Amino acid sequence: VVEANLLAAIASQATGEVFNVGCGSRVSLLEIIGLLEAILGRPLDRHHTARRSGDVDHTQADISKAKRLMGYLPLVEFEAGLRRTVEFFRRLTPRPAP
Image (cartoon, rainbow, N blue to C red; front, side, top):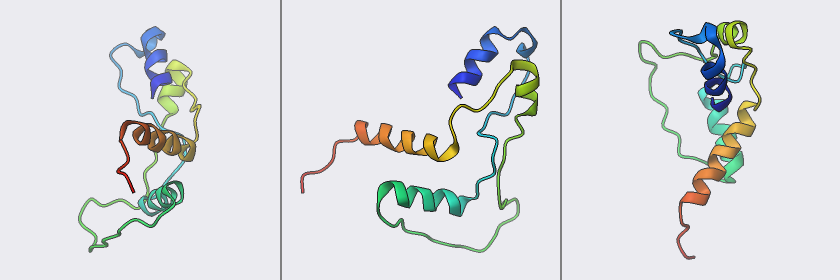
């Protein structure tokens, strides 16, 4: 996201445009939960409910416009970015004493 914002600031073709920014791969919610469990080293509580109108199985940002107009390419894979995000919040959050 940071790289996309920096590119948008200098790409004349980006002015007034809206872009999708992502890692260029498809990830399901259950895959994200599995990755978080692996990163955190513990299971997460899961509460499955019936599907609702508008629920999607997978999400994937179409980054082709950002590639074409700004030269955007993902620099960090999804799992690595998720690990960095978790570590960021771990540093911010004091851990309770055992």
